[in-house]
Amino acid sequence: MQEKTLYHANVQAAGALDTSKVLRNTYLLLGMTLLNSALFTGIAMALNIGHGTALVLSLVGLVMLFVVHKTADSAKGLAAVFVFTALLGAALGPMLQAYLSLANGPQLVMQALGGTALVFFGLSAYALTTRKDFSFLGGFLMVGLLVIVVASIANIFFQVPAASLAISAAAVFIMSGLILFDTSRIIHGGETNYIRATVALYLDIYNLFVHMLHLLGAFSGDD
Image (cartoon, rainbow, N blue to C red; front, top):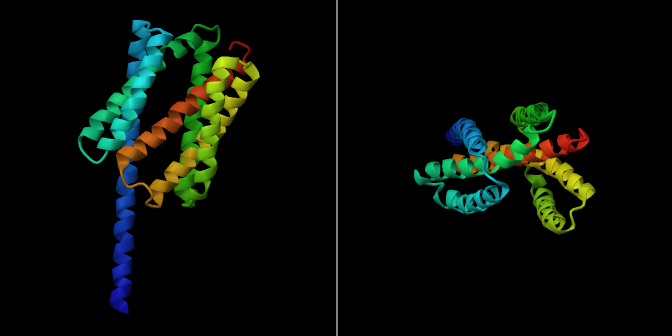
């Protein structure tokens, strides 16, 4: 009985070490990919790329997302994730230029960055401190994402400002939930690959920032 207890204790200790390693590697890679995105956003703005080019970059980035997931268990996955985040970072260039051209544009961008950082660090700290399992949110969040995607596509044709604001508000809510969900998955062993974990959190932060900036711009009266 004592040997069995020691065995289970050793298994739990090994699992905790593995989880800590995944968390450490995830946050390290996440920081590097965010800096990578920021660098390529700056390059795209310096080159003054257009919205059409940004759309193409986003579509190529979507293809790269599948490549990242396919190669996540090999060294190629690291290269793929940097290409993926570079593409999405560059795709932000025209949007950020449009906001920065507004009278209070720099303040809006900084507020969106600050708000995104506050939400991410706050929710991540909550998940890490409480160690609650937020896997029960999975179904609700997936349905919410599907609704946002469908509504966004529909609004491309109908161009309803109120609907656009509602979509962004819902997106901020859903991305916040996904930060809890994705962090919880790492803590509880639901995601053991730090490249996939990084991409999940990166997308949460990326979309949270974009939609928060849209909301701030709209409520400032300049969007």
